[in-house]
Image 1 (tube, rainbow, N blue to C red):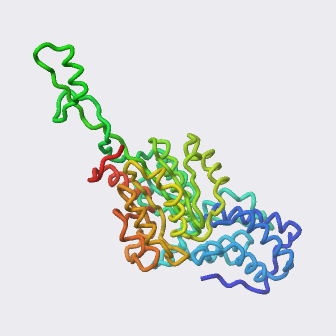
Image 2 (cartoon, helix red, strand yellow):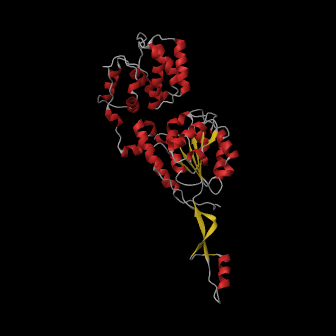
Image 3 (cartoon, helix red, strand yellow):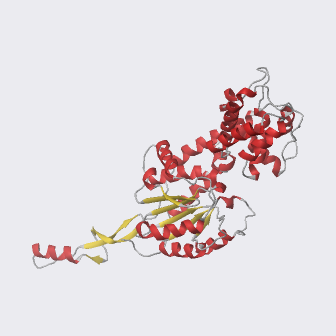
Length: 403
């Protein structure tokens, strides 16, 4: 629920710095997890200049319309607005959160948002517009505590900024083993069941009456790993963590190919090969143009199958798809592209953050179209789920040899 905003409350008197304050407010929202970019900030400043500085409720709903794009962002925006712009009733609402009371699901979500907002305010106290220096606001410090054990199972969506930093450090140390499979090439062996005829004939030229037998064994190697990660608006909070995950995997082994998609497909493999994760992600940000856009899974898989599958899916590649399966094109052509992708891969694994819900049901058209062609359907919303993925990928599976 959005808190009532009184139409008779005036805006802060320091209206001459309204553009600067809007910019600081946008930084607070971004730190708290809302996808607020430069374009939205400029549009908001222009809208406020057009609307004029009038009553607080007009100002509130103007910013709400431009900064909030999803229903679950409303409560966080409401909290941030009334703290940043100094709502006199904010202490009453915060005390209500801290008093012991019966918690329901909505209150639990509100507490998680308060943790993220408290962490963001800790980094932006100097940017909050001040009318009365003696007026201060405090949030319960217990909201920001998380032990290592809790961090392992905590949803990425609910982590504060400090917890996200700790999770990124843990992901950087993650090692993702992939089973090694026999190739069509051979190495020499001291004994075995397969005789190396060339080595045996060469040895016979140097031997006398008895011909020593030489043996060979198939050379084993990790198959290529191909990662397709959804970066649409519904996956934005998770895609940031998965980029760190893909960087760690790329720098841990060879033959890793990484792609991101929303409205179109982008190959980011060469950007993630840089050892410095910050520089690597900066390069990715410059290369990708459809962050937090719509999702066209079928069209993006078609582009991958037509342009990249023959280059990267050879030699028995293992394919990871990281997506919630929500397709704005209503799964147009998705079934055909998933079938082709499954036939080209040794193993097709789908990581879906929506599986964190106990009552998850495959009702979306995109999910229904993808599920029949997936070998493993797993959750990917926490550090523990990524660790479990390592156990899945390290297991041996039957399949054809790779070259």
